[in-house]
Length: 165
Image (tube, rainbow, N blue to C red; front, side, top):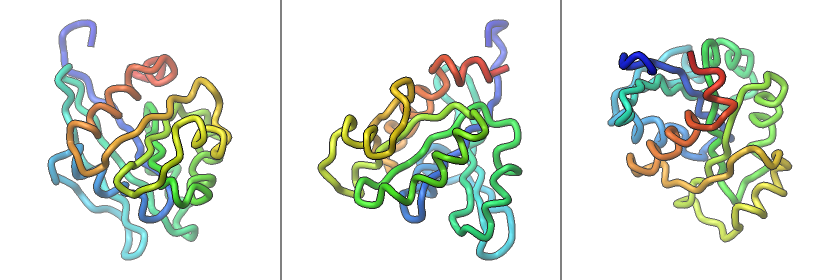
């Protein structure tokens, strides 16, 4: 965006079943979503615009293991990902973390606080075994300001910024 034009990027929202991916997407995009895929394998796409003018295509990934082959399609052109976690079901996040690490796609971890749990960010980092350079934030997936803050943070991290055209 150095030349003053608004740019567009794609960001994935991944995580285990029921962590709040759809709520996150809808909060980011004010409810404007497009469903894609087949019944039982639906992923969603929504669009958010940050105050900086950057438009973000926010894509979720299907939860069911039988549809994980679609994740590569969902991630086409993505500059980074948000791993949304429920502190009461951290193991559900392991497959998404493994998939992102294998593809070297920059990501951050966003703890969806309304789901409960009392663990702090340090405990979550250790439990998920994420590297020290990976941001671990808290958010409320139902609050647009919280969601946009997470997206802005992802886009300003060094690794995601290097993937940004």
